[in-house]
Structure formats: structure tokens, C-alpha cells
Length: 82
Image (cartoon, rainbow, N blue to C red; front, top):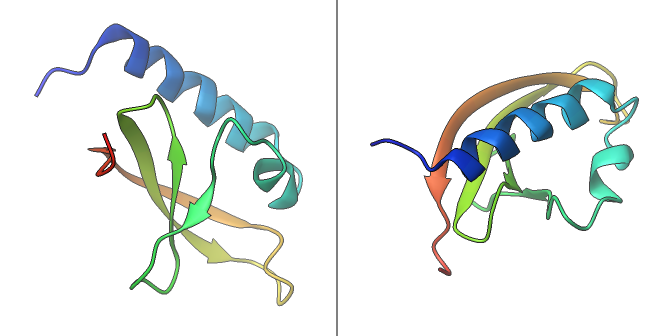
């Protein structure tokens, strides 16, 4: 499936936000990302790219407070609410 150009641009912008975050709260406090843990998974999360698409990832936490970790980008999925 070919993704729209705006989704691709948002993907790269979101990756930059992930790279520049110092702790996980830097991402959670950004309401535009709608960063959330996915139900039914131990360490799977998602962030909004557009109203229709989300970036799904897994995080391997590197500290016991779960404030820093390694992000593994998994897929860009269609958001179920749209």
C-alpha cells in the first residue's frame, strides 16, 4: 500500500520527536502525538501520524522507572476510529 505524502512527512517528523525526547514524558506531554499504550500488549505503544494513520512501536525499557528505552518501530496502521 502506498502511503499519502502527508503521512510520510508526519512519520519523519515523529521519528525526529522520538529521537529528541530525553524521557518518555517528553512524548506523553505532547497532545498532538496522542502517545498511548496499546491494550493487550506488554510493551506496544502507538502515536498519531494523522487522523487516519498511527505509528506502532515496541519499547524495551532501559531503566526500572520506565522513563527511557529503545524504540522499535513496527508499522504504520490505519486508525480504527476513522
